[in-house]
Length: 316
Image (cartoon, rainbow, N blue to C red; front, side, top):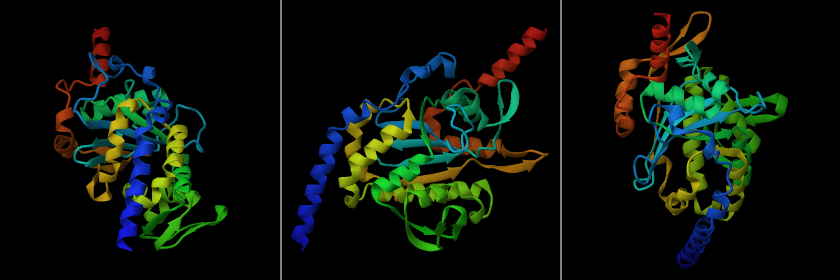
């Protein structure tokens, strides 16, 4: 029995390597939009580049096309991700979508940045908020969750609560169950079953990402990788140079949920007729220093500071 398991493992590994060494042709056809964002559009004298070998820093933007079919709309999920392919460590800092920021000289929630300028607007807002040199993005439609889970043949979760949506016949029991694509999509969208707060929904999304990764890289899903690659092709937009990623893909089995470290930007909610999330400056600076020290911008004068100064100069 052991001998048969070893043979199956190596056959699966061969299939895995074959798919990924040939992945360049798939990755090259992704909708990368490299010409869409120029470095100096994000910051003065900025260039879009990979700062640290074998590591990528990018923002993951979740867009719900069921809410709006336009390309520019409010981002529903905002996660700053640092992925190191040598250590297989992943750091995720979620920024609540109601976080109060300055955009174009006015006060807005940070999720509005995408509605104004798409991924470029989100990158600019995050550079200003966190003071880090973030050049890359990956934008996914929430439909991605349904499609990737269906391509995998389902995903197993251990839900702390029951999620029940009778109108679309979705019932997810408390405890362990296997979700199909539609159920998984509703699971990551759900907020009220988890207490109603955006923080609780973010924490549930962190859990789902970790669970999904463990199952994507499991040997049982290796034969399904071509289907999953096609889902990435159709549902993901990014300016990450995916051709460079081909060499890293064989390291995918090194990743696991145990190496994913997830956080929420420190702060608190305030309601003045509008619900805002106010980032705590000191605690936010501490977590940025801890997670993204190598990416901190030397000049902490933000795009918004410069715009305000220019306005004052013109008034004088």
